[in-house]
Length: 397
Image (cartoon, rainbow, N blue to C red; front, side):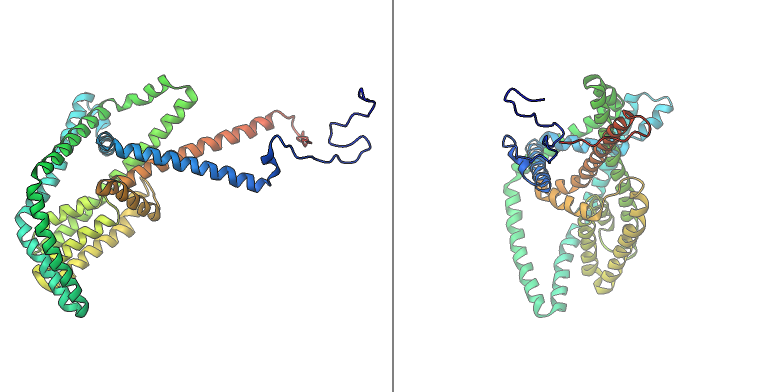
């Protein structure tokens, strides 16, 4: 059919009236379509990556700036994930949720207080021995290493001077130390109170989320929260069990070797186990140096053998057996998380980095599953709209 100008109308099938293919002209209203598809895909992923990094940086900045509130919340979540299995056990035996939460918090306070008291008591009683042992160990190492040892001895002499200055500074900064202790105590009390409320009312969280959000969004949020909580719980339970085993056997070995402050060093090993790789290395190094100064090279080698044997059993037997049932993180991921956490918030950041990373990966796995199900549902819907045996007609532009 001809138009008003008398010229034949172009076919809508992408061909001219004479049957030749119509020449495609670039759409100047959307110039990005002129780029090849791989370039457009790379640009889209780059923009998405920049947005993700920006949002993550803002979240981390907000968490660091509000650490007086965020750190107790994270510590409370870790404590709750570790102790929550005790709640159903007590509730099934007729104990009220409030009383069960209170008893669980009392157990937490007793356990943490016991470890800290053991560490402080052992270090206080053996501090003079350890303080004398470490310089003696440094001198022995310097004598064995020859010319290179002179540099170590010079560094130790400088460290002694710096230590004296540090002691003087600490003596003059008692008020600031009291302020820090007050903040730590306040954060600890807040975390303990949050643990109580999380234990008592945590079972109501899914219903509360469903009451405020649309059904589909609420289910996704609940699934993400449950998966993150399971990941944190798995890390805390597995790490605590491994830390207990490490501390027990290393303490027994140090006691048999008559190393001073063995219980305190064992408590240090227990606390260091919550910082993967770094904590075990530092606590084991301190134990070996104390053994070197007090018992000589033979005792130090035996202590090193005990520490290495326990660490090898942990890395090759305990971690694959325990952590694979709870949460599985690649060692490279753990290293990056520890380094990033220590760079952001020091020792506390290194302590919290791995469980937070495990929770984040759990959320990502849930979201990936939701996206995959949505895509499969869309393909099934498109297939269901065609009759059996009918093929989809190609779309012509």
